[in-house]
Length: 266
Image 1 (cartoon, one colour):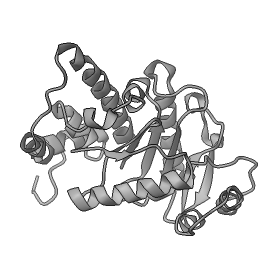
Image 2: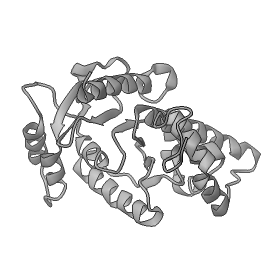
Image 3: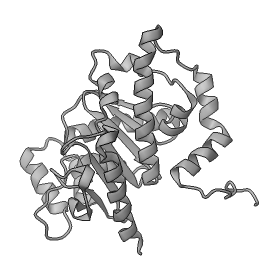
Image 4: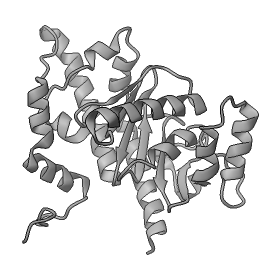
């Protein structure tokens, strides 16, 4: 199996995992997923497809170039968006790429990001749709949250889906990288949902699952006086620990069990 065939098979499996009804991440046609096909193209969920039962025919292959170019084109109209997505679509298909294709295109340009999962978990959205979500989400609560979800999420205030949202995500991701010196693992969209980024499907799935647990724990803390956040020093210590990085690499499937660290001898 070539790398392109493997990537679409992995994307289908990841999408179905995220769409399983019992996980309560999405319902109906909510959410969208993507994967890099090669240097010039990526797959993104077709508009209207459902993650729970999607197959390879539920994705559209899209060229990065035209999609990314529109993000730098100044004011754009709905007709510009429609024309660009049609121009960027590879092959003869009646399917339309998700309007979130712009967001997926830019996120798949980040270092070591090959898969993206955008979902609307009920537990997470209960916080993102609250009157004052950002102060509540300002700190980290427990080690595995840091290991799976990162030192912090990227926060994006509400912007309607499409080009405007993709531009705001790009702006806030660039600010995150400038501050932390690494790409984010998760993005929180106010009144909208969660984006998980990964080198592998497992990383996307793990980040999504851990954010749901985090949201439930965070909500539960208010029954007992509110959250007790870890200090910045504690967060950084956990985030940089070699054993935690090793454990995460096993969870995400980026390292085989027993494989030595880079630069070491077995």
